[in-house]
Length: 296
Ligand code: GDP
Image (cartoon, rainbow, N blue to C red; front, top):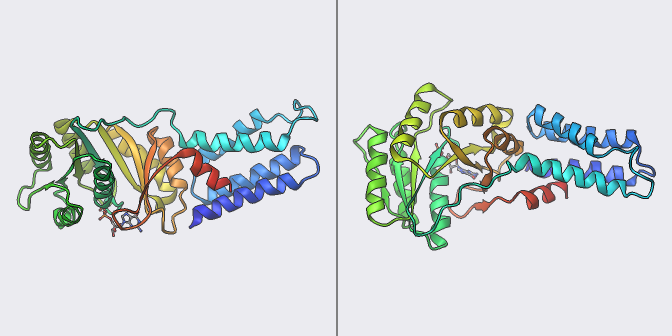
């Protein structure tokens, strides 16, 4: 996994710095340049990396640090904090309440793993005692309803959709109403994707969102899209009120840096990551342990 390589490169840079006899401007710059290179290679957006470097230099003022200060520790802490800052938008995702009906709408491009992730999310909550339900408002992709139905059946989660109805708004509204009546407390609406960001997709998303009034909109992003992550996430955020991000396919050859860019673009936290095709290959995302792992 390339994320591990990123972690390796960063910890190597920190290690080199630790081995230096004296920490001077050159040693600090070498270390920061090494980290910058690693982050860019992992597809973190250029501006984020540049800002991070500037911030660290502002915090770590070698001239002001008296000889007794543990400069290595201060630099390491500053790098840790800055990486956390990129991943932490400063506010948690909206918290849903068990037992109270909530609507969660999933958006993302076709192939991002949206439908798979809807079921994983439902299954995760079901195991924690929620009563989830799945609504397939993806009328664009042939086979979307069958896929959702198959996944939902496997996980024993109620589902709603249609083979004949072509209006996604209508299906979404009907599904949400039905499951509210059935006292489901987590109604998940899977929306259409497209191969690329298109006006038609965004318009459809807006309509489904207006009609179902979701409590939370989750943007699903494939971790392997690289530098495109920032623009893609921003385009979705501009159309609907994205409140959280789920990054999929973290098990593959993804560079992972896209996750950092998606947080910056949507100002929303990553709440889960997908780590495989199976229902339970799904992990809660926590910033600090993630960055700690990255730094080795
Ligand atoms: P959608 O078009 O966005 O609804 O995407 P799908 O849910 O159909 O997923 C597209 C492909 O990605 C499928 O083959 C999924 O099994 C696969 N997939 C989804 N999430 C993950 C993940 O976290 N890891 C891996 N390896 N594959 C995934």
